[in-house]
Figure 1 (tube, rainbow, N blue to C red):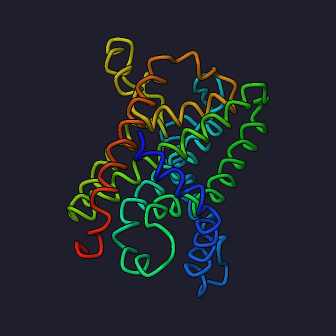
Figure 2 (tube, rainbow, N blue to C red):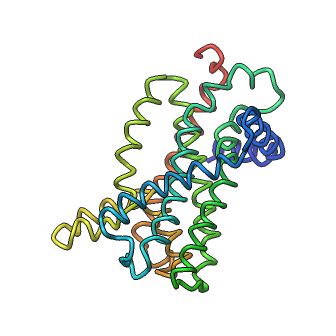
Length: 272
């Protein structure tokens, strides 16, 4: 646990640096584009529109109800969370390897780099999520006290992304092929995340055990939890098995990632 606290304190101490680096990288990314950071909004909106055309209109769900709420709002909220998780997850995986030589010359620890990538994606996520909320409200959904639990789920997202980002980023320095493996696995996880369709509904009652097993994966937990918050479909304490599975995995990844990072980070520059 001491190793976890060392890295968490580093991130808290250097959060102003994290914020400045995220802003700098965002501006640098779009410095030659006339629309600038608007592309961070346009790209996810276009991707969500594509999924709506395929799963909503082409498959006849555009006017259907999912979990008792209109499909369009259900889809957009879920996609907003998935895009945030997936982008931050993949960006964090290469964050240390891509920046180790530059950061080694700076006066801040390289352990902050995974969270820098998450920080970059927070604003686009919140804007895309707001679009989903507006669409849900326009479809007849009303907000309730359930919305308060978004604070919990957003905190859970940040902790999970840092834990898995630190672990993946460290392993990628040690074994560069790991990044390609992660990319392949994430394509599979997308269909198991519940981002575009209700897993339980698709699998059916005859395979309820398989559905429950899929539903304990952390991406499903965070996506469905955020939907619960804004679509008033449940409270987080109503899913104890998923809570235990999510936090057990997150703490395990944070522990292992912290141990490996502190053990090898003095050699990162030599390994890249």
